[in-house]
Length: 240
Image (cartoon, rainbow, N blue to C red):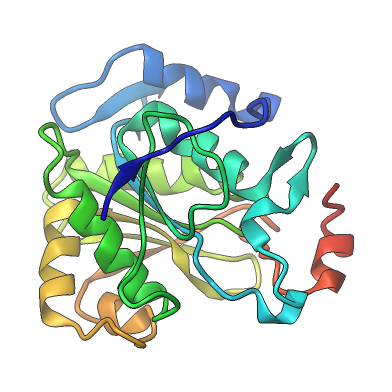
């Protein structure tokens, strides 16, 4: 079942100054391909829907939900949602214990805790009825405190693909350590739907979906995809 978000949310986090121009591009209008000029000679994608995966068990945190962890006056989930909310429809896949803005959709993987691939499938199903569904969809985990710093690189690469004859199905973030981040992805919506039709999703890893797609590896800034799995991570990333 898909429901709109309800309840109040903490104040949105101010964006890092170095990325202000990228966020301002969302208000400047976009072309038919969802791209806008972010600087002279530079295009960046500013129209995309988002699936935010927020339904894990947080077992290494002793069951404390990652989504509700504090982040500079906000929460991890609220920060992730606000990072992408200006650019299209957002659906959060996870339990109903975290407040969301009214315009954010909420759903749950079926059955609950059946894995991130199932969550992506549930999120895509929630977006399918949206009348003005975007040509691109971001897939993000809710436990990356600095993922907004990775989005400009993904969006710039997507804009290049959208304005060329590239056959790439989407962009996958690659950390400074060379690790592919399976929940920091910007993918063509048609390709995402096609991959979900072809892949098993219940209790399946995310790579079971992505292996059906040609994803362009996109380097992103250091620590932008650092995630929170343990209390050591909470302290290392200075979450408060």
